[in-house]
Length: 358
Length: 125
Image 1: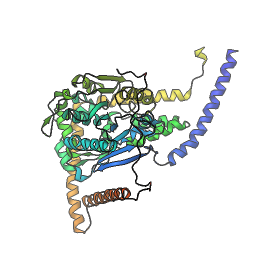
Image 2: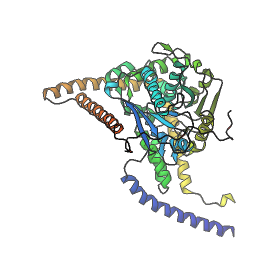
Image 3: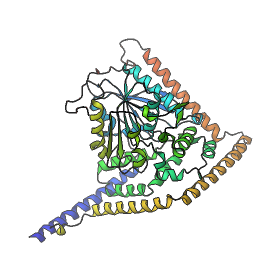
């Protein structure tokens, strides 16, 4: 009896295997012939743009919204649509549905004429200008920020140097503060070997493929493994759709303004000045202890870009009493986007910010 | 009973890919995490930059002698076009705001009231 059950199961499994093989072939042709994945589809208005800077305002999706508007601050190395990848896999959509008024600071590739942009341009000009615009549009003085990776570093510098500013609550996601713990990035940018001046002075704007190559070298097998997995799952439309959106995002890395790259390398990577409390921006000391507003930090346990030990010390350094650390399973990207983020991180952002947004 | 369950080839394949990925990444990270690798990589990069700078200068001179634009010139043109595009967009926005009353186009989006309260279950920590 048991043997015949196994036989039936084997026949069913064989049938399933044949079905999937046929579907894989049919859908594989569609996959190869299809264009770029459609991303960032949630309706929005471009409300402010200047050079590399873009400020978007997403159309509210509920009848009643929280008083304090929220600004998503994207990392300078990648496009902000990772927050709005696909319908059903969009942090923006998730937050709009829960009554937040969502803005996003996003970046376009800096032009050669913007090669001189440095940390002070981002933290003393771009972020304050966007906040002013948000205040003008919403009529509210207060703002909340949700910042990712280097966007988190910029938000921290802004907050520490504008202690009585309009920022009321800050959520950082995978934000490195101890740059001597940046793993392979620390080794590759060792000041004994990396001639950052030659790089910046020759190129002006550090090209996207240089940045992308650095990310890829951290996990050299990731791309090939991803392609093998998608081939295996080719019959699964949802998997393929998600893969294509992530692949597009990964391939659309942004170049970096030369001065910004030089400062990040010298001041953060080499001298670790943010961690030591010695970073100066426009002559003002960046002391994270000056940050006293509520802050939440989400850290990924297996982050290969901003490793755990680089991100972990943040909350010990700020002066806030109201602070929460969230250590979640996952990597640098899966923490903020994709099926795991929908279950793990997003509800935490909603719970923590909703009570602080009235 | 579990021993009698036939193997799932798709799951086995995924498992194999994961193992392979981990092994390659571990090996590569060990190899690329050394001073020697960093030194060689940066030396190569410096050479490439030197070559790029020298070649760029020669090309720029050659192109100028043929009365043709260099890459720098083309990039500058592209930046100028982008800036013009942006100015046009700003003019369009301003014009929309000047449209006569009653026209929906250009009217600012009406924001919902900012009176939402959080669900009671989510107590402040």
